[in-house]
Length: 451
Image (cartoon, rainbow, N blue to C red):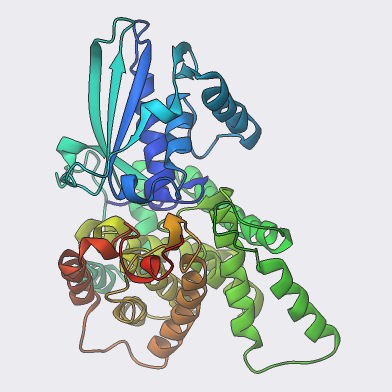
C-alpha cells in the first residue's frame, strides 16, 4: 500500500526525483560509512546527468552525504555545508567523519554511459586514504522522492503488515466501497490506522496541509529572480497585487477565480524552483496543483471545512497510490504526464470527494484529470524546473477543478475507466522517446539553444 506518508513528503525544491531522492540516497550511503573512509565519489547517470545541474542534484547529494534529510534540513546549515565543500573541499560524512570532498571532482555528471535500468541512477563509491574502494552502492530515485537500491527496481515488496482494505486498482476501490459503504478517504484512513496510530496519521495530514498553505503564502509574498541562468522573474506577488487592485476598484472579471487558482499554483512552484520547502504532491515538479485546488476549495466552496480538506488529501492518496503502483510518477520514466498529469488526477478526485461526490463520481473525476494529460512531455528549458513547469501546474489545477465539476454533473458512469487510463499512461510513457523525458534534449528545451 502506498501510504499518505509515502506520497506526501515534506522536502525542498526544485525536484523530488533529482533533489529529494538523491539527498535521501546519499544520506543512507553516508550512514553506513566507517572511519576508514577518506573520500567519496558520486556518479550520476541518465536524466540525473542531463538535468541534474539545473535541478540542484550536486547540492542535494552533498547535503545527503553530510547526513541531512530533505524534511529537516535548515537553509542556513545547508549553505554552510555547501560553502565548505565548494571552497574548502571538506565534508563531514554523515555529520561525523571529516573527509576530503571536491564537488568538481567527486560529483560526476556521466552523460556518456548508456542509461542504466532506471533513468535516475546514482553510484556511490567510498575510498580509503590509499585510494582503494571500500564500498560501492547504486541507488535509483524513482520519482516523488522514493529511492531504492538499483537491484530492487521493479521488485514487488510484499506487505509487512495487513491492512483491512487492500487494493491495487480503481476497480478494487469501487468494489470495497460498494461492499462496505466506505468512501475512498475512509478506506485509506482505515488502512493507514492499521500501520500506525490514528493520531499520527491525523498529525501528518495536518502538517502536510499546513505546509502547503504556508508555501502559497510565502510564494505570494516573494519577489525577485529565480536561481539559474534563465533569470526568470517571480510573478506571483505581481499577480496578487493586480488581483487586489481589481478588487479595490470593484472590478470583477468572469475569470477571476481561475486567476486566483493560477496564482496559488504559481506561488508554490516558484517556491519550489527557489529550493524552498514544499510538499511532494506527488512530485516537486507538480507540487503546485494540489495546494492550489485545496486553497480553491477552502476559500471558495460553500461548506468547505478542515474535515473536507482531510477528505481531499486522503482521497488523493488513493488515486496517487494507484498511479505509483501501476504506472509511474517520474518525469524521467513517463514524461510530465506522470507528474502534473497525476497531480491533476489526484486533485480532481480529492476536490470531488470533498464536495460530496460518490465513489463512482470521484473515480470519474480522476479519470478525466489524467485523460487530458496523456502524452505530456517533460522538457524543462535549461534543465531548470521553471519553464514550462511553473505554468503547467497552473493549468493542471484549472483542469482538476473542471474535471471534478464535469464528473459531479454526471452519475459516475463513463466508458473509459481510471484503470484503463493508468495503463494507457504507462504504455504512452514507455513509447515516448527518451529526449522528451526530463533530459532537456527535446521539445521546448531545445527551442532555446542559448540555454
